[in-house]
Structure formats: structure tokens, C-alpha cells
Amino acid sequence: MPASPKIALAILNDNPSSTAEMKAIEFCAAQGIPLHVLLIADTQFAKYGYVDQLAPGSSKEEFVDYVQKETEAFMANAEERLGKYSVESVIHRQEGRYVKTISAWTLDNEVTQLFVGQSPKKGLMKLKQSLAEKIQQACQCDVQIISNE
View 1: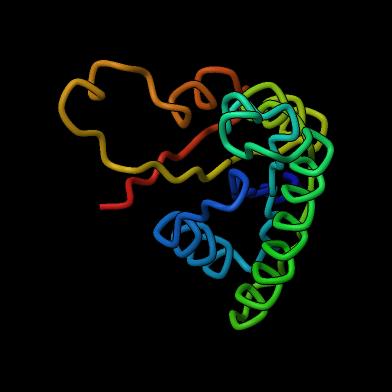
View 2 (view 1 turned 45 degrees about the vertical axis):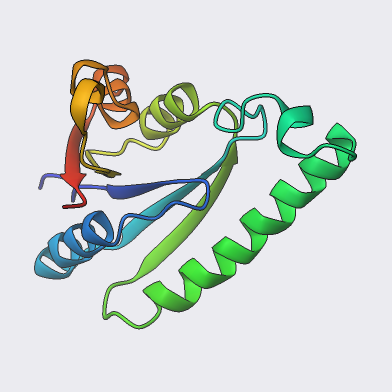
């Protein structure tokens, strides 16, 4: 008997994609399987750029504490939001760079399909590879990029 698929939804810091979230929930509900939600906290600040430009007058440690608190608050919000659906959800929290952390986690946890949200590209940004596309390229599982249009 083949093993049931393991489905995950990647949430990048505090930026959930409601479209990707709903697609993942619908997919898992149809198959009667749990949804694994992977919340990535970019503690290496790849998203934030230079800390001293964003938080002048505060130390890097204070900014790290701020990001950690925001991540914890977002996790609580995600648990509450996902609890409203009839799909079992398991929330996993990881810290690190998005692409490397997600690709390693999906491999270590034998994920078969990953849902990732993506904002619509505009203008010259259409020429640049998106974070979701980088994740898709790095992962060994099937990655569904869901556009938030």
C-alpha cells in the first residue's frame, strides 16, 4: 500500500498567502490528510537588509528579539486561523534562510508536495527570479506556486 502524501505549506516570516493557504487546505481536505505548515523566521535578516537602517537607535539584539516576538505572535495567529477548518494542521517553526531551510526541511520530512504563495510580478520584476521560484528549483518535492492575484 503506497504511503499517503505529505503536504506542506510554506509561510515566509509574517507574510501568509491566503490563496496558497486555501489551496493547501482544500487539497488536504479532499484527501483526508493533515497539512504541515512550515513557518520560516528569517533570523539571518535576508529579508530585512541592514538592521541598523531599519531600526536606527536599537541594537541588533533588540531587533532580533522583536523579530522573534513577531514570529511567535504570527504562529499563534496561524494556529487560530487554521483551527477553523476541518483539516488537521501541524505547525512547524524553523529559523534560517528561506530557500536553504525550506529545501532541507522538505527533504528531511519527506514532503511530497509544497504550496508556496507568490505576489504578482510587475514591470521589470518579471525578469527576476522570485523567492517562490528559487524554492521550487531547490526542493526535490513537487512545489505548487500559487499567485496572490
